[in-house]
Structure formats: structure tokens, C-alpha cells
Length: 454
Image (tube, rainbow, N blue to C red; front, side, top):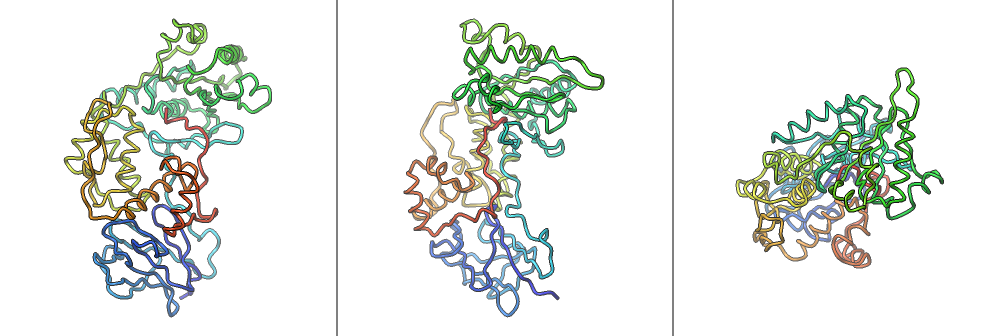
């Protein structure tokens, strides 16, 4: 049998190599090479080492044990490529590479798709020019839900796909208007790579559309493509005039055999009719865009959609973070269904992600959701989490690690979320012994606007 030349583990969605020269220690204490901020993990729990020509794992007589492929081990245990190690609720994937293997045999340094394949997070990859390649049809984030309005929305998308007229997508922030835009684009049969996304919030705070077009930094739609204008109402009057002129140019393009003109989709979270009446939005532009309309209702009006969405996020983030979270308790289900969700699907996704990352058992309870007591959307008293006998150091370490994973180790963004200075975060990372993985071990950061979280 060929000897292994390298070994890797994947934990919390990140893949890292193991050293064959020294043991890799795992435990709750900050002195370990791999720190697991789990209450059921011992301070020094186990180690993975290369001894006598083979990889082994040794349990340090931990309080709750170490499991390999769901079987408890004692003492030193030989590892095989593909084994799954479980410590508390954390699953660690182990893999070996052998001499003579090609480069393609090495594991990708993140074996989970990034968060942007969820129904309300980023679902497209930007190029430097600002155009977005939407995902293939089979990997397109679904329009989840069992409510009658959501079932009708899925049918509307199919009907709209067969048409070429502009579509205005309305609804409050966080309902997933960008996801609907992508589904309309795919239902039309247009090429995936021809989806062009303009973030009107970004445009309105920087260079005007006309100036961006003149200097070539604004990606224009191509023949048979789709132009998606996200949050159209925020554009200043000068950009509204430019956009009206552009729409007139697109409509005047000559028809070619077997080809279609570029199609325009727009979204808004404000009432455009009121904006027109108040003089904030051009009437002629409004009528150009408001040919076909799709209205997405807020989540509080789609109660049957809440649990399918929550379970989708639970399953996804349990896989991504390597945590054995099996479901929701009855009290958690009641809390999810009674909450008003003022932030809509985006708020639900963030709530479930936080619960999966930080809960201390295999079942998410109501206390893990950290929802407000009131179900009106107003700020109420926060439900206190259950007592778990954890030190402040353990709780802080768990929250810092979850925030870093959420921001893909962007320390500036993580520090902003944590409400501390970047230098303070660096000091805490040094104290806890947490290091950022090398660049080759990380998926690319998503810094561009998100077309589907509006």
C-alpha cells in the first residue's frame, strides 16, 4: 500500500493540512492548535498525529469521548481517508493524499459551497466589469415555501419568463427580490452569463450612471441578456433621465432573426406610485418599467413558508459549519412561527445561522434563536439563553469564531459586527491562538453588492 504523503481535516467549513512532524491537539482550551468552543468538549480533548507510518487519533480520556464514524474510540485509533471524527456536536472530516496522486486529488480548501447559494443571500458571481454570471439552472436557489402566495409566485415566474416586457418586482427589504429576478431570467431561456446587475444604491452614492457609462465602468446588457436594476427608486433625477434614454435605445434596437432584445427587470422596496406623485421619481420612467409587476409579500404574511425556510437554512449551515444540528424543538418552532420577522427572509436566515453556530445541543431551542419577546417587530426584552456552565472566555471565543466564519475571516468586517476596534480583535485572536488560514485554503471573499438580498 502506498504511504500517505499528506493529510487534511475539514472543520467549521475550512480545510487545513495536518503536520506529520508534531501532533495536532484539539480541545476547548486556547492552548490547543485547534480550538473548539463547545461546552461538551474537554479543555484538552484529543490529538491527531502521524506515528509509525500511519495517521492516528488519540483521545485524552475526555469527559464526553471522541467518535470516529459515530463509534466511540479509546486510546489511540488508526484513521482512514474519509473518516468522520465527531467531538461534541462538531464533525471533522479527515482525508489523506498518497504519493503519486495528481494535483486534482488534493481536497478543495472549502468543501462546502459559500453562503451565497441560499435563497436570500448572494446568488451570483461578479466580474470586474460589474456583470453577474447567474448559477446554472440546477443550482439556482429555490423559491421555497408552501403558502398559496408563494406557490402562485412560482407560477408567475414561469409565465413571466416566456415574455420579453420589463418586470417590476416589489416588496420590502429582505424578501428575496433578487432571487425572483434570477428565476425570471432563467425561465426566459436566456444565457446564464448574460445577467447584468446594477446596484442602484451604490450608483446613487458614487459616480452617476452617465459618467460610469462614459468611462466604461458600467456593464451594459448584451443581446438576449437581462439587466436587473436593484432598488430603482433611490436613483437621483439625473440618473433617472439617463436610464430612460437607455431604455428607449434598447426598445429601438432592430429585431434580428432568432434573437431577442435585452430585457429589463427592476426592483423596489418603496411605493413608486407615491414617489411619482411626490415628484421623486419620473412618471415616464415609471410607466416604462411598470409593464409587468410581481409583488413579494412580507414573511409575516406567509406563515406556512417559515418552517420550510428555517429547516433549509438549518440543514445548509449544519453542513457548512460541520455541526450535528438535527432540528428544532417544539418551543423553537412556536417562536419561529410567532415572530413578526421585520427583516423578512434575510432576518430568518441570519437567526438560524447564529443558532446553528452557537447552540449547545443537537436541537435548536427557542432560547438559541435569541428572538425578541414581542412579535410585533418592535424591540422587546431579549430572551436570555439557557445556562450552560460556560466561562465568559468560552462564550467570547465561540462568538468571535462564528463571526469570523460568517465574514470569511475579513477582520475589518468582523470587528465592525463585534463592535470593537480591529486592533482589539487582533489582540483577542493572538490570546486565543486563532490564526487566519493561508490564502490557498480560503474561498474568494464576496465583497460586491448582493442582487438577491433586497
